[in-house]
Image (tube, rainbow, N blue to C red):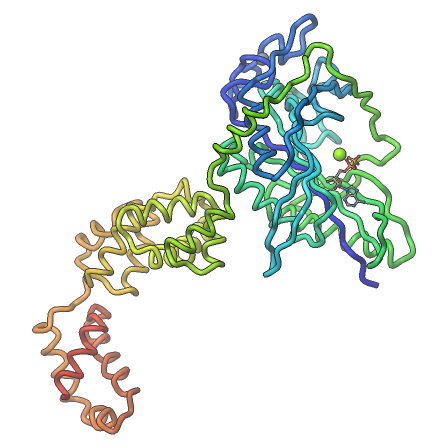
Length: 481
Ligand code: ADP
Ligand code: MG
Ligand code: ZN
């Protein structure tokens, strides 16, 4: 039996504001533990939180870019729980009055675009980070645990989707698009490995035609887009197997183990918390001035859909290429910088999407960290355009340039490996090859165009691939005329 897959995502994103959500401590990553802390984010008694205006603005921008309504009033609430990552025993969050509600995101996946509802965007503070010392790095089996409060109080936005996604790849495409929007807004680094972008996936199955939702599980600990997709595929298979064997899915939170490729139960519904939310008496409600919201809306940067449309129009790229570049901000920025430096957009995009993308993938490098920059690509394309190197040579030079960071022109100069376009130099070789191959000439005269490929091949062999195929072609035809 085939079941309909239902997926809803809850995404947490750490903002890259200078200071934390409710105190003046800096937002840092990788600092010496417990150095970016103060009495407020350590939860000392008697301190008072002060809202970070920059964070409220960023939250509103996120809401607007996801087509949400910005609530005229929003309110902070205390989410009560006991855990050593939060000594004040509650997290300041938002409950029934979040900053933004009722939006959507249009997500393209496998040639189909579907509208995915956004339930809400709310503001909260991040917790401290527990580090479990021991074999597995998880709390079970740990020898001891230590806590770093540098992350406590970092502005954290939660974005909740409707249960509108229907496949694992669609959920992945949703997250890719959401990340590209957040990067376009510049509100977060969105680094999944470092945890500044975290995604919990809720998934259930139901029979096609059912209107009620099935029992869901919530999967945590996916640190990449690929992990999200794999975890969902695993969970769908697990739940399908349960249902087809007449068993039931238990509502629970499950942990994704990327190395093992499986989810395991973390806690079941019986252990679910009653957070006893109530409005935080230390904080007043935030009244959003409509004029201010409109100012923010007007100031929204170009978002991925608009960028894809513009890249297609201005640079004459295919829809698919334009979308890939728009969804990958650093790649899109790379292209625009290369074109601004004088390169032809189509050729530059081709190199980016094929050669460069393959090398980045092969070496597991982020484009921002690559030694090969727009300046390198401009240089390479100039060498090709000038006929100094052939397309084939360019691929070799590109690999060296990518690995070493040296400019293609410098590599060409050093190796002396340039294309022979000089007609005098080539003429002699062409004469030799023509003299040695009367049959091919005969074939060519009889209209067998294949013969010219053979002749060009001979010349390429004699010149160790350095002859310009273009120049050789022209020479042969001229000589035979
Ligand atoms: P919880 O109270 O368990 O956190 P919520 O109702 O707040 O559940 O929903 C959390 C997320 O789970 C949302 O993204 C929502 O769309 C999704 N979701 C809710 N019910 C289901 C379901 N039955 N199957 C799949 N996703 C669901
Ligand atoms: Mg939830
Ligand atoms: Zn602090």
